[in-house]
Amino acid sequence: MNSMMNNFCVFILSHKRPECDTLKMLKKYGYSGDYRVVLSTDDDYINEYKKSITNEKILIFDKQKVRHLCDTMISTYDFNPNGSIYARAFIQEKADEMGLDYFCMADDDISKIYHREDVDSKMKQKEISNIDYVFLAFIEFLESDRRIASINPALDDGFFGGVNGSFKQTATRLPFQFFVFKTANKRKFVGLRSEDYNLSYLNTDLLYFTYWHLSIASPKMTTNSGGIDYMKSKKRLNPSMFMWLAHPIGIKVLPNEKRRIFKNKIFPQIVSDRFKK
Image 1 (tube, rainbow, N blue to C red):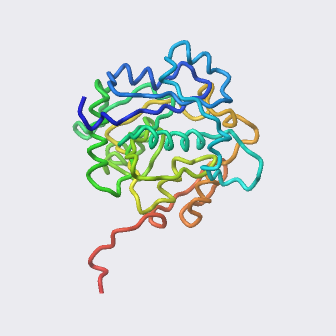
Image 2 (cartoon, rainbow, N blue to C red):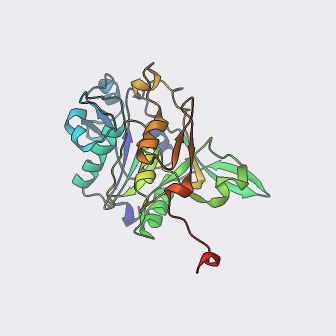
Image 3 (tube, rainbow, N blue to C red):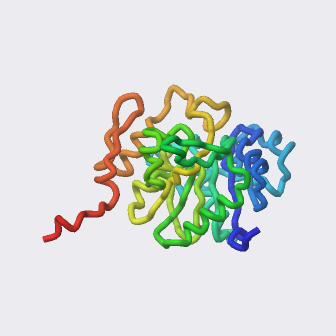
């Protein structure tokens, strides 16, 4: 394995999903590096995980002990454990502790990764065969510019506009689900919901990229069993509100948990020379 991956680890955030599709996916695509499955003490399925995953590959943390690292954006002193922000904070601390140069932070329900390309103006996809090469390419991209904080594949159902949509741009600012980070680039996840999206809305001086020539397959939100309990609760919190709190000028909250994003009000813009005085 390339030396760039010697100090690399995949951390899989998991909760009540002992089948852990992401771990199966890594093994299917020949992953040769280190990994950890990250569980919280309030997970009733810990013993189920241990039936198929060796103890040294499981990290168990207490959300109460990392809550001081988390800004959930909820104005209450009551502790709300129903969010992945705690696991993300724990993973970042652990990556530092392990002395990693790079690490991947992945959700637990990713079953496939596809490579996409434009063939005669039609989008074609094919499953990757070796994920080590993907990680190496991502790491090399992170090293190309100190302002690049992370890169991740696109979501499989996000290719609106086909070959002329986001795919045509190759990479856009939109982080979620399967990040590859450089450990030295410090970041803070904010919000009990939408903590992944908020990375780019809060840290506009850094670049968080989605690479549109790769995509991950995972179930649509709330359709998968297990996971974060509050996702199916009647007291669900509108994720768009947390995005609005992160950048109130650039996000407009709409009914039914929808939103409108004004990227030109959030991110620095390149102005044409013709406007120069």
